[in-house]
Length: 82
Image (tube, rainbow, N blue to C red; front, side):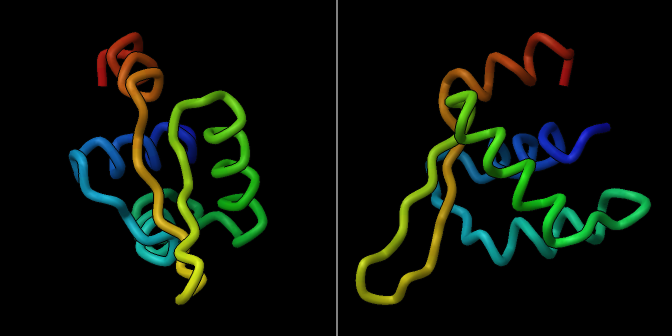
C-alpha cells in the first residue's frame, strides 16, 4: 500500500480529531516496509494536501502541524475498498 493511502487510513481512524504530523510520521515509519525516509513522508503529505484529500493546520503559537482527512480523502479510500 502506498504511503499516501496509509496516511489517509490513519487520518480516517482519527475521525474528526486532528492528528499531529509527528504521530503520522512515526506511525508510517512503523507500518510501511521498507520504512520511508522523512523526505518521502513529506512528499506524500504534500501530495495528499495538494489533491485535497487532507488539510493541515499549523498552530500559530506552538507551530505544531496537525492533519485531518477530508471528504475527498475518504472517497479515495472507499474507491479502493479500504
